[in-house]
Length: 430
Image 1 (cartoon, rainbow, N blue to C red):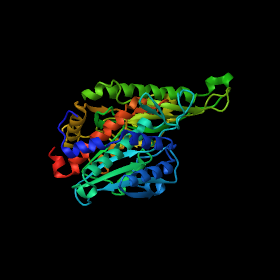
Image 2 (cartoon, rainbow, N blue to C red):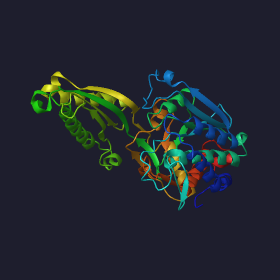
Image 3 (tube, one colour):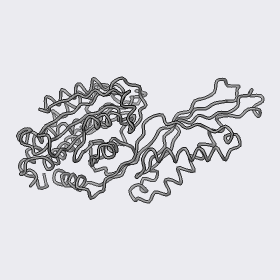
């Protein structure tokens, strides 16, 4: 290593075993854990936590009861369980830091583009290919490895000056109910890192999104007399035109350099359209599902007000929709934005660890997607950043993969950061 590491920090870095890390990652990648079905992978991770010397707690939250919480972040999948697993090491009652990740993954979809079976982890040229490799089981294993290394280097939990929580949650992909359940179970602290894919740079701010449903009513008529009817599909075009104008205005108004550089930090899309009952009948109803970006600095509730205003204005400008306005319903995840100042001790301290372990200065990033980070910041009052292996561009895609050496590097950096946060005094002085 090229940086200034104390002996205990160097010992933690050196103790991270790439072979063990690869085996643990392959183990959990082989368990399908599509959102709504996370029990099996959580059981496997709980076992890995126990083998790593952590005290393990299984929190079984009732998803129906949680949905009554005023801060419930929405969901898209029906579920009967919401299992959260909490691993603890170090003395409670003092300073607490958290490494946290989600274990749910998105569906595989069409398997034909995959070069390897999506549930059979396959190592190719140093990268593991499988669904969930980068989003975010690679980061989960990096976090567990880091906690294990920091604890071992400190001589066990008794050698730490504070408490480390390693937490895995379900239901991130469809809103973050698992993260809210963890917060309600007491998962809060002085600082948290989520090892989502960031290219080993540090995400200090992210946008958000809401998913919505438009229901447009038309007037049925025989196709041969279509002028006597009103096509709900044509009226959907009126609304998508209004959404396009709004999208352009919202993105043009963004002045933060990192966001403006993205070109389209707040996209709006219609991702699903259904309607019609007969090819020769004018469509009398169309249902369209979409996604509306939440601007950095805004909550999902503020974005909902904007969205409803846009649809209301488009309806008011159209003679048919003025009398038959479309309805707007929120249907899935509700992701507020979140940010933490670049000069906050959390990102600056983590950046110092990156520099000392990897010999480079990490970039501070602002991302256009939503994440559990916002729940820890807003509902858990816990400063949080994202720092993890791999890049988000390959998440949710066929041939998803993560390089094992990046997972190792992430674990090494997090181990050093943990020791500097709650390790023995000698580690902090390094």
